[in-house]
Length: 383
Ligand SMILES: Cc1ncc(COP(=O)(O)O)c(C=O)c1O
Image (tube, rainbow, N blue to C red; front, side, top):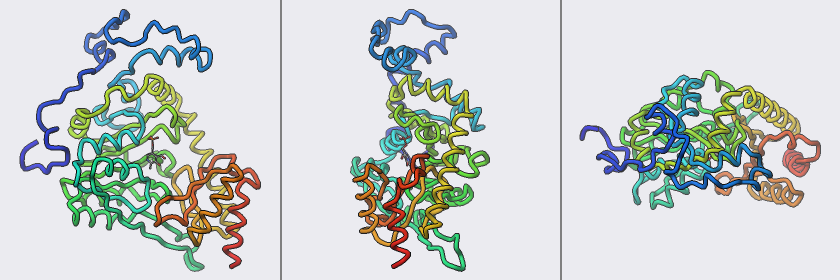
Protein backbone atom coordinates (compact mmCIF):
# COMPACT_ATOMS: atom_id res chain seq x y z
CA UNK A 1 0.00 0.00 0.00
CA UNK A 2 1.51 3.33 -1.02
CA UNK A 3 0.50 6.53 0.73
CA UNK A 4 -1.21 7.67 -2.48
CA UNK A 5 -3.65 4.72 -2.42
CA UNK A 6 -6.99 5.61 -0.82
CA UNK A 7 -7.44 3.88 2.52
CA UNK A 8 -10.47 1.60 2.86
CA UNK A 9 -9.42 -0.44 5.92
CA UNK A 10 -8.52 0.64 9.44
CA UNK A 11 -5.13 2.36 9.22
CA UNK A 12 -3.24 -0.02 11.51
CA UNK A 13 -4.14 -3.05 9.38
CA UNK A 14 -1.79 -1.77 6.67
CA UNK A 15 1.10 -2.17 9.12
CA UNK A 16 2.85 -5.49 9.83
CA UNK A 17 0.58 -7.87 11.82
CA UNK A 18 -1.37 -8.79 13.79
CA UNK A 19 -0.72 -12.42 12.87
CA UNK A 20 -3.17 -15.24 13.58
CA UNK A 21 -1.72 -17.17 16.54
CA UNK A 22 -3.63 -20.33 15.50
CA UNK A 23 -3.20 -21.15 11.81
CA UNK A 24 -4.19 -24.72 12.79
CA UNK A 25 -3.04 -28.30 12.52
CA UNK A 26 -4.32 -28.84 9.00
CA UNK A 27 -2.18 -25.95 7.76
CA UNK A 28 0.80 -27.37 9.65
CA UNK A 29 0.27 -30.81 8.09
CA UNK A 30 0.11 -29.25 4.64
CA UNK A 31 3.29 -27.32 5.33
CA UNK A 32 5.09 -30.46 6.61
CA UNK A 33 3.76 -32.59 3.78
CA UNK A 34 2.65 -35.39 6.11
CA UNK A 35 -0.13 -36.17 8.59
CA UNK A 36 0.25 -35.82 12.37
CA UNK A 37 -1.83 -38.73 13.68
CA UNK A 38 -0.79 -38.27 17.35
CA UNK A 39 -2.13 -34.87 18.26
CA UNK A 40 -1.31 -33.80 21.80
CA UNK A 41 -0.89 -30.13 21.03
CA UNK A 42 -4.24 -28.39 20.83
CA UNK A 43 -6.18 -29.15 24.04
CA UNK A 44 -9.31 -30.40 22.29
CA UNK A 45 -11.49 -33.10 23.89
CA UNK A 46 -10.15 -35.78 21.56
CA UNK A 47 -10.89 -38.63 24.00
CA UNK A 48 -14.51 -37.61 24.53
CA UNK A 49 -16.48 -40.80 23.73
CA UNK A 50 -19.52 -38.90 22.40
CA UNK A 51 -21.92 -41.77 22.99
CA UNK A 52 -24.85 -39.36 23.41
CA UNK A 53 -24.04 -37.15 20.44
CA UNK A 54 -23.15 -40.17 18.27
CA UNK A 55 -26.36 -41.95 19.23
CA UNK A 56 -28.62 -38.97 18.69
CA UNK A 57 -26.96 -37.16 15.80
CA UNK A 58 -24.74 -39.78 14.17
CA UNK A 59 -21.17 -40.90 14.68
CA UNK A 60 -19.72 -38.91 11.79
CA UNK A 61 -20.95 -35.72 13.41
CA UNK A 62 -19.63 -36.81 16.81
CA UNK A 63 -16.19 -37.52 15.30
CA UNK A 64 -16.06 -34.18 13.51
CA UNK A 65 -17.09 -32.35 16.66
CA UNK A 66 -13.92 -33.16 18.60
CA UNK A 67 -11.43 -31.11 16.58
CA UNK A 68 -11.01 -27.53 15.46
CA UNK A 69 -11.76 -27.23 11.76
CA UNK A 70 -9.19 -26.40 9.11
CA UNK A 71 -8.91 -22.63 9.59
CA UNK A 72 -7.90 -22.25 5.93
CA UNK A 73 -10.92 -24.25 4.70
CA UNK A 74 -8.41 -25.58 2.18
CA UNK A 75 -10.58 -28.24 0.58
CA UNK A 76 -13.80 -26.20 0.44
CA UNK A 77 -11.98 -23.24 -1.08
CA UNK A 78 -10.42 -25.45 -3.74
CA UNK A 79 -13.85 -26.91 -4.57
CA UNK A 80 -15.35 -23.41 -4.75
CA UNK A 81 -12.45 -22.14 -6.84
CA UNK A 82 -13.01 -24.86 -9.40
CA UNK A 83 -16.77 -24.50 -9.41
CA UNK A 84 -16.75 -20.70 -9.71
CA UNK A 85 -13.67 -20.32 -11.90
CA UNK A 86 -11.89 -18.02 -9.44
CA UNK A 87 -8.49 -18.28 -7.75
CA UNK A 88 -8.22 -20.08 -4.38
CA UNK A 89 -6.60 -16.98 -2.89
CA UNK A 90 -9.65 -14.85 -3.69
CA UNK A 91 -11.90 -16.94 -1.40
CA UNK A 92 -12.47 -16.58 2.34
CA UNK A 93 -14.73 -18.98 4.25
CA UNK A 94 -16.56 -17.96 7.42
CA UNK A 95 -19.56 -18.84 9.58
CA UNK A 96 -22.21 -17.52 7.19
CA UNK A 97 -22.66 -14.29 5.29
CA UNK A 98 -23.58 -12.51 8.52
CA UNK A 99 -20.16 -13.30 10.00
CA UNK A 100 -18.58 -11.87 6.87
CA UNK A 101 -20.66 -8.69 7.23
CA UNK A 102 -19.38 -8.37 10.79
CA UNK A 103 -15.84 -9.05 9.64
CA UNK A 104 -15.93 -6.29 7.02
CA UNK A 105 -17.35 -3.86 9.58
CA UNK A 106 -14.63 -4.78 12.09
CA UNK A 107 -11.89 -4.18 9.53
CA UNK A 108 -13.15 -1.01 7.89
CA UNK A 109 -15.34 1.10 10.20
CA UNK A 110 -14.57 3.34 13.15
CA UNK A 111 -17.17 4.99 15.38
CA UNK A 112 -18.54 8.10 13.68
CA UNK A 113 -17.80 6.89 10.13
CA UNK A 114 -20.59 6.34 7.63
CA UNK A 115 -22.21 3.39 5.91
CA UNK A 116 -24.82 3.67 3.14
CA UNK A 117 -27.65 1.18 2.72
CA UNK A 118 -31.20 0.98 1.32
CA UNK A 119 -34.10 1.87 3.60
CA UNK A 120 -35.69 -1.47 4.50
CA UNK A 121 -33.16 -3.87 2.99
CA UNK A 122 -31.61 -6.79 4.93
CA UNK A 123 -30.85 -5.03 8.20
CA UNK A 124 -27.87 -6.92 9.63
CA UNK A 125 -25.19 -4.71 8.12
CA UNK A 126 -26.80 -1.59 9.60
CA UNK A 127 -27.19 -3.35 12.95
CA UNK A 128 -23.50 -4.28 13.06
CA UNK A 129 -22.46 -0.79 11.90
CA UNK A 130 -24.54 0.89 14.60
CA UNK A 131 -23.05 -1.47 17.16
CA UNK A 132 -19.64 -0.09 16.27
CA UNK A 133 -20.86 3.50 16.62
CA UNK A 134 -20.96 4.14 12.88
CA UNK A 135 -23.62 6.30 11.28
CA UNK A 136 -26.03 4.50 8.94
CA UNK A 137 -27.46 6.53 6.08
CA UNK A 138 -30.46 5.02 4.32
CA UNK A 139 -31.49 5.65 0.73
CA UNK A 140 -35.10 4.96 -0.36
CA UNK A 141 -35.87 2.18 -2.83
CA UNK A 142 -37.17 3.04 -6.27
CA UNK A 143 -40.71 1.80 -6.63
CA UNK A 144 -42.94 1.17 -9.65
CA UNK A 145 -46.45 -0.22 -10.02
CA UNK A 146 -47.86 -2.35 -12.80
CA UNK A 147 -50.43 -0.67 -15.02
CA UNK A 148 -52.76 -1.84 -17.77
CA UNK A 149 -50.21 -0.58 -20.32
CA UNK A 150 -47.26 -2.16 -18.51
CA UNK A 151 -48.56 -5.20 -16.59
CA UNK A 152 -45.06 -6.48 -15.75
CA UNK A 153 -43.56 -3.25 -14.48
CA UNK A 154 -44.13 -3.83 -10.74
CA UNK A 155 -40.84 -3.19 -9.03
CA UNK A 156 -39.15 -2.36 -5.76
CA UNK A 157 -35.41 -1.99 -6.17
CA UNK A 158 -32.35 -0.59 -4.44
CA UNK A 159 -31.59 2.75 -6.08
CA UNK A 160 -28.05 2.36 -7.38
CA UNK A 161 -27.62 5.98 -8.46
CA UNK A 162 -28.83 7.23 -5.08
CA UNK A 163 -26.52 4.81 -3.22
CA UNK A 164 -23.55 6.13 -5.20
CA UNK A 165 -24.57 9.75 -4.71
CA UNK A 166 -24.98 9.25 -0.95
CA UNK A 167 -21.57 7.56 -0.74
CA UNK A 168 -19.88 10.62 -2.26
CA UNK A 169 -21.97 13.14 -0.38
CA UNK A 170 -21.31 11.55 3.02
CA UNK A 171 -17.73 10.35 2.35
CA UNK A 172 -18.92 6.85 3.30
CA UNK A 173 -16.57 3.96 4.08
CA UNK A 174 -18.94 1.25 2.87
CA UNK A 175 -21.99 0.93 0.60
CA UNK A 176 -24.18 -2.14 1.14
CA UNK A 177 -26.13 -3.76 -1.69
CA UNK A 178 -27.97 -7.07 -1.45
CA UNK A 179 -28.24 -8.51 -4.96
CA UNK A 180 -30.68 -10.18 -5.35
CA UNK A 181 -32.19 -8.04 -2.66
CA UNK A 182 -34.01 -9.06 0.50
CA UNK A 183 -36.89 -8.28 0.92
CA UNK A 184 -37.70 -6.93 -2.54
CA UNK A 185 -36.31 -9.94 -4.44
CA UNK A 186 -35.02 -7.51 -7.06
CA UNK A 187 -31.98 -8.45 -9.17
CA UNK A 188 -29.71 -5.79 -10.64
CA UNK A 189 -27.61 -6.91 -13.61
CA UNK A 190 -23.87 -7.50 -13.18
CA UNK A 191 -23.33 -4.60 -15.53
CA UNK A 192 -25.32 -2.24 -13.30
CA UNK A 193 -23.47 -3.45 -10.21
CA UNK A 194 -20.14 -2.81 -11.93
CA UNK A 195 -21.35 0.67 -12.86
CA UNK A 196 -22.26 1.25 -9.20
CA UNK A 197 -18.77 0.19 -8.18
CA UNK A 198 -17.26 2.54 -10.76
CA UNK A 199 -19.37 5.41 -9.41
CA UNK A 200 -18.17 4.96 -5.81
CA UNK A 201 -15.26 6.90 -4.35
CA UNK A 202 -12.00 4.93 -4.35
CA UNK A 203 -11.87 4.88 -0.53
CA UNK A 204 -15.39 3.43 -0.27
CA UNK A 205 -15.86 -0.36 -0.29
CA UNK A 206 -18.84 -2.05 -1.91
CA UNK A 207 -20.32 -4.76 0.28
CA UNK A 208 -22.15 -6.90 -2.25
CA UNK A 209 -24.33 -9.41 -0.43
CA UNK A 210 -25.16 -12.24 -2.84
CA UNK A 211 -26.84 -14.56 -0.32
CA UNK A 212 -29.53 -15.43 -2.92
CA UNK A 213 -27.12 -15.73 -5.85
CA UNK A 214 -28.02 -19.38 -6.57
CA UNK A 215 -31.64 -18.44 -7.31
CA UNK A 216 -30.76 -15.91 -10.02
CA UNK A 217 -32.13 -17.03 -13.39
CA UNK A 218 -28.67 -16.35 -14.84
CA UNK A 219 -26.73 -17.87 -11.90
CA UNK A 220 -24.67 -20.17 -14.13
CA UNK A 221 -23.40 -17.27 -16.28
CA UNK A 222 -23.29 -14.56 -13.62
CA UNK A 223 -20.15 -12.77 -12.59
CA UNK A 224 -18.11 -14.57 -9.90
CA UNK A 225 -14.89 -12.67 -10.34
CA UNK A 226 -13.36 -10.66 -7.52
CA UNK A 227 -14.16 -7.03 -8.16
CA UNK A 228 -11.88 -4.19 -7.15
CA UNK A 229 -12.66 -2.74 -3.72
CA UNK A 230 -15.66 -5.04 -3.39
CA UNK A 231 -16.59 -7.79 -0.93
CA UNK A 232 -18.83 -10.34 -2.65
CA UNK A 233 -20.64 -12.55 -0.11
CA UNK A 234 -22.33 -15.90 -0.69
CA UNK A 235 -23.84 -18.48 1.64
CA UNK A 236 -24.67 -22.15 2.10
CA UNK A 237 -27.74 -21.15 4.14
CA UNK A 238 -30.22 -20.91 1.28
CA UNK A 239 -29.64 -23.05 -1.83
CA UNK A 240 -27.61 -25.60 0.17
CA UNK A 241 -29.95 -25.71 3.18
CA UNK A 242 -27.20 -25.33 5.81
CA UNK A 243 -28.42 -22.27 7.74
CA UNK A 244 -28.16 -24.13 11.02
CA UNK A 245 -24.54 -25.11 10.46
CA UNK A 246 -23.34 -21.57 9.56
CA UNK A 247 -21.22 -21.55 6.42
CA UNK A 248 -20.60 -18.80 3.90
CA UNK A 249 -17.82 -17.35 1.82
CA UNK A 250 -16.48 -14.19 0.29
CA UNK A 251 -14.93 -13.52 -3.09
CA UNK A 252 -12.64 -10.51 -3.03
CA UNK A 253 -9.24 -9.34 -4.16
CA UNK A 254 -6.36 -11.13 -2.45
CA UNK A 255 -4.93 -7.93 -0.94
CA UNK A 256 -8.27 -7.21 0.73
CA UNK A 257 -8.55 -10.77 2.03
CA UNK A 258 -5.06 -10.51 3.52
CA UNK A 259 -6.18 -7.51 5.57
CA UNK A 260 -9.52 -9.04 6.57
CA UNK A 261 -7.75 -12.21 7.69
CA UNK A 262 -5.91 -10.18 10.33
CA UNK A 263 -9.11 -9.65 12.31
CA UNK A 264 -10.95 -12.84 11.41
CA UNK A 265 -12.09 -15.32 14.07
CA UNK A 266 -9.93 -18.18 12.83
CA UNK A 267 -12.03 -21.09 14.16
CA UNK A 268 -15.48 -19.57 13.67
CA UNK A 269 -16.36 -22.25 11.10
CA UNK A 270 -17.09 -25.59 12.74
CA UNK A 271 -15.70 -28.87 11.43
CA UNK A 272 -19.22 -30.30 10.82
CA UNK A 273 -20.13 -27.18 8.80
CA UNK A 274 -17.02 -27.45 6.68
CA UNK A 275 -17.50 -31.19 6.09
CA UNK A 276 -21.14 -30.62 5.11
CA UNK A 277 -20.17 -27.91 2.63
CA UNK A 278 -17.47 -30.12 1.09
CA UNK A 279 -19.90 -33.01 0.76
CA UNK A 280 -22.60 -30.92 -0.89
CA UNK A 281 -20.11 -29.47 -3.38
CA UNK A 282 -19.06 -33.02 -4.25
CA UNK A 283 -22.72 -33.67 -5.11
CA UNK A 284 -23.90 -30.37 -6.62
CA UNK A 285 -26.91 -32.00 -8.24
CA UNK A 286 -28.76 -32.07 -4.92
CA UNK A 287 -28.64 -28.28 -4.43
CA UNK A 288 -29.38 -27.73 -8.13
CA UNK A 289 -32.52 -29.87 -7.85
CA UNK A 290 -33.52 -28.02 -4.69
CA UNK A 291 -33.07 -24.61 -6.34
CA UNK A 292 -35.14 -25.67 -9.37
CA UNK A 293 -37.94 -26.94 -7.12
CA UNK A 294 -37.96 -23.74 -5.07
CA UNK A 295 -38.13 -21.59 -8.20
CA UNK A 296 -40.98 -23.68 -9.56
CA UNK A 297 -42.83 -23.36 -6.27
CA UNK A 298 -42.17 -19.60 -6.15
CA UNK A 299 -43.46 -19.07 -9.67
CA UNK A 300 -46.51 -21.22 -9.01
CA UNK A 301 -47.40 -19.27 -5.88
CA UNK A 302 -46.78 -15.94 -7.64
CA UNK A 303 -49.07 -16.95 -10.49
CA UNK A 304 -51.77 -18.08 -8.09
CA UNK A 305 -51.66 -14.85 -6.05
CA UNK A 306 -51.55 -12.71 -9.20
CA UNK A 307 -54.63 -14.53 -10.48
CA UNK A 308 -56.41 -13.17 -7.39
CA UNK A 309 -55.23 -9.66 -8.28
CA UNK A 310 -52.17 -9.51 -6.00
CA UNK A 311 -49.32 -7.08 -6.60
CA UNK A 312 -46.51 -9.66 -6.51
CA UNK A 313 -43.01 -8.30 -6.95
CA UNK A 314 -40.67 -10.08 -9.37
CA UNK A 315 -38.20 -12.19 -7.42
CA UNK A 316 -34.82 -13.76 -8.15
CA UNK A 317 -34.73 -15.44 -4.73
CA UNK A 318 -36.34 -18.26 -2.72
CA UNK A 319 -39.16 -15.98 -1.56
CA UNK A 320 -41.73 -13.65 -3.02
CA UNK A 321 -43.24 -10.40 -1.83
CA UNK A 322 -46.82 -9.25 -1.98
CA UNK A 323 -47.29 -5.51 -1.86
CA UNK A 324 -50.49 -4.53 -0.09
CA UNK A 325 -52.01 -1.07 -0.15
CA UNK A 326 -51.39 -0.30 3.51
CA UNK A 327 -49.02 -1.29 6.30
CA UNK A 328 -52.01 -1.66 8.65
CA UNK A 329 -53.62 -4.29 6.46
CA UNK A 330 -50.29 -6.07 6.00
CA UNK A 331 -49.79 -6.13 9.79
CA UNK A 332 -53.30 -7.47 10.28
CA UNK A 333 -52.82 -10.27 7.73
CA UNK A 334 -49.49 -11.21 9.27
CA UNK A 335 -51.00 -11.34 12.78
CA UNK A 336 -53.96 -13.41 11.65
CA UNK A 337 -51.76 -15.90 9.83
CA UNK A 338 -49.48 -16.11 12.86
CA UNK A 339 -52.47 -16.95 15.07
CA UNK A 340 -53.05 -19.88 12.69
CA UNK A 341 -49.43 -20.97 13.07
CA UNK A 342 -48.29 -19.57 9.71
CA UNK A 343 -45.28 -17.27 9.86
CA UNK A 344 -44.63 -14.83 7.05
CA UNK A 345 -42.44 -11.73 7.32
CA UNK A 346 -43.39 -8.09 7.33
CA UNK A 347 -40.50 -5.68 7.26
CA UNK A 348 -40.07 -3.83 10.57
CA UNK A 349 -38.81 -0.87 8.53
CA UNK A 350 -41.48 1.84 8.24
CA UNK A 351 -40.72 2.31 4.53
CA UNK A 352 -41.70 -1.30 3.73
CA UNK A 353 -44.43 -2.10 6.25
CA UNK A 354 -46.91 -2.78 3.43
CA UNK A 355 -44.79 -5.61 2.00
CA UNK A 356 -45.32 -9.23 3.04
CA UNK A 357 -42.54 -11.72 2.32
CA UNK A 358 -43.21 -15.43 1.92
CA UNK A 359 -40.50 -18.09 1.72
CA UNK A 360 -41.76 -20.31 -1.07
CA UNK A 361 -41.64 -23.76 0.45
CA UNK A 362 -43.83 -26.50 -0.95
CA UNK A 363 -45.94 -26.27 2.19
CA UNK A 364 -46.88 -22.69 1.26
CA UNK A 365 -48.79 -24.10 -1.75
CA UNK A 366 -51.11 -26.25 0.37
CA UNK A 367 -54.64 -24.97 -0.42
CA UNK A 368 -55.91 -22.76 2.39
CA UNK A 369 -52.48 -22.26 3.96
CA UNK A 370 -52.45 -18.56 3.01
CA UNK A 371 -56.23 -18.13 2.94
CA UNK A 372 -56.16 -14.95 5.06
CA UNK A 373 -53.73 -13.32 2.62
CA UNK A 374 -55.79 -14.41 -0.37
CA UNK A 375 -58.88 -12.93 1.25
CA UNK A 376 -57.08 -9.60 1.88
CA UNK A 377 -55.94 -9.47 -1.75
CA UNK A 378 -59.48 -10.03 -3.02
CA UNK A 379 -60.87 -7.43 -0.56
CA UNK A 380 -58.26 -4.86 -1.62
CA UNK A 381 -59.13 -5.32 -5.26
CA UNK A 382 -62.84 -5.01 -4.56
CA UNK A 383 -62.42 -1.74 -2.63
C1 LIG B 1 -29.43 -10.67 2.17
C2 LIG B 1 -29.00 -11.64 3.22
N1 LIG B 1 -27.73 -11.68 3.59
C3 LIG B 1 -27.28 -12.53 4.51
C4 LIG B 1 -28.15 -13.41 5.14
C5 LIG B 1 -27.61 -14.31 6.20
O1 LIG B 1 -26.89 -15.36 5.63
P1 LIG B 1 -26.09 -16.39 6.53
O2 LIG B 1 -27.06 -17.39 7.04
O3 LIG B 1 -25.10 -16.97 5.59
O4 LIG B 1 -25.46 -15.61 7.63
C6 LIG B 1 -29.50 -13.41 4.80
C7 LIG B 1 -30.44 -14.32 5.46
O5 LIG B 1 -31.63 -14.19 5.43
C8 LIG B 1 -29.93 -12.50 3.82
O6 LIG B 1 -31.22 -12.42 3.48
